[in-house]
Length: 70
Image: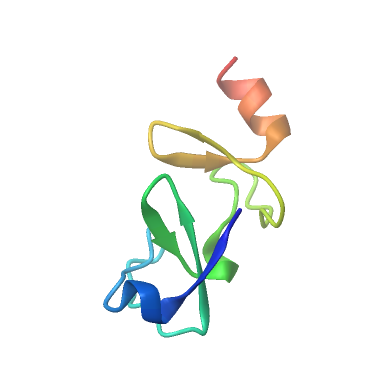
């Protein structure tokens, strides 16, 4: 997942907590911005550090994506 400087997306709101992102870095997934600590699986709550899967605008870890979506 690419990390971007929050200066590139000034005024961005986090897709999970809906709060402004004032951190030095943010993550962009499917054109939605997130705080680094807010990128977590919607099913199990694990933080997603390296990869994530998206279905219906919800983030999943590989295990829960395979379990619930496929």
